Image (cartoon, rainbow, N blue to C red; front, side, top):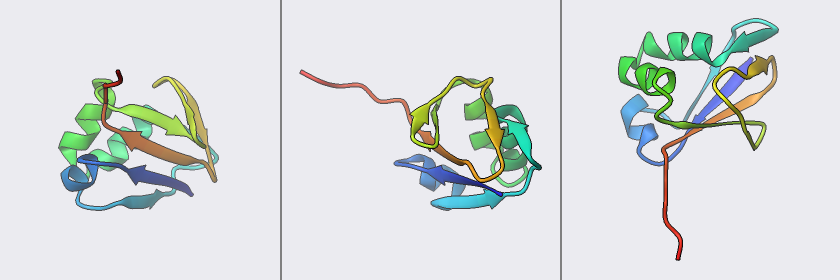
Length: 83
C-alpha cells in the first residue's frame, strides 16, 4: 500500500487528507495520478501537468520517480515567498 497525503488547498480539491492505494510492489506517479483521477480528475491532471510538488518519504522527487509499496507520497501545491 502507498499512502498519498494531500496538503493545503489540495485537500479541498480531492475532498480528503489522505488515501491508501494498492498499486503493486512498484509504481509510478503517472499510475498514481490515474488512480486518483478515478475520483478526482482535477487532481490527476494537476499531477500529470506538474502543477504540484511531490515528495516521497519526505524527499522531493521528479515525476518519473519510482514509488514502492510502503512509501508515503505527499502532494503539495507550489508555493513561493521569502524575504
